[in-house]
Image 1 (cartoon, rainbow, N blue to C red):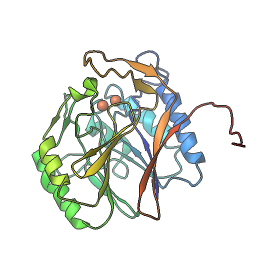
Image 2 (tube, rainbow, N blue to C red):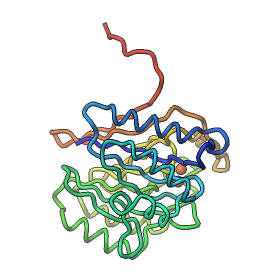
Image 3 (cartoon, rainbow, N blue to C red):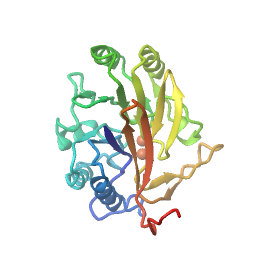
Amino acid sequence: MLIAQISDTHLSERGQKTCGVAPMADNLRRCVESINAFDPTPDVVLLSGDVTNNFAVTEAELAVEILAGLAMPLFVVPGNHDDRAVLADVFGPARCRLSEAGFVDYVIEGYALRIIALDTLHAGYPGGQFDTSQRDWLRARLDEAPDQPTLIFAHHPPLKLGVPETDQDGFVGVDALGDLIAEYTNIERFLCGHVHLHTNTRWRGTMVTTAPSIGMQLALNLKDASDSKFLLADPAYLLHCWTDEQSLITHHIQVSNLEGPFEFS
Ligand SMILES: [Fe+2]
Ligand SMILES: [Fe+2]
């Protein structure tokens, strides 16, 4: 099974660059083209939040329009730059389904890996939230298939990553989330975005991976939380490859106009 993960698309209004400089719509089109051209074709695409830059319906509609070019199913969770009701409405229940409790919490079935979409949006705050009402829902979903390899995908990483700029955002209810995750041995990975950098680390018996943004790369400052800047980067996304040996291998794909390919010899 092959999963493409794109994150933090931060789309602005049609024709506008994000923050005046980042061509995010063009970057997203380039990612769609690259994902479609990959051989073998990815089975699904996960979009791990911050789809829009300013919560707008028109920004979400632009995302839907560009992502309609994907040749495979797409699944979405909201980030702190999104309005979950807007995303759910514009993407529709097949791609961004609201639970009865009003969260974008749902399960993707029918693949070798079971995928649980978890809504960590804490409306009005940059950081994450795991609501107490989500605890019972997530436990019930995990108890449905405790032996099937499972991925969780969300926007906010559930631990501090040594990146002060996003570590300071916090995550309400993260200990309850961690205690629950630690009870299960079949969670292959906790996939997220938010940091605008590709990172990997162990956490509560699983591994957390953050995907890069598709072009607004955090200017990494390991000391100063107030230094919040980004660099214009080539569009990038992750490819998670579930092998016959039951390993999940993550490749970082840079969509660049590089010369090549060349023979090694
Ligand atoms: Fe973001
Ligand atoms: Fe974010």
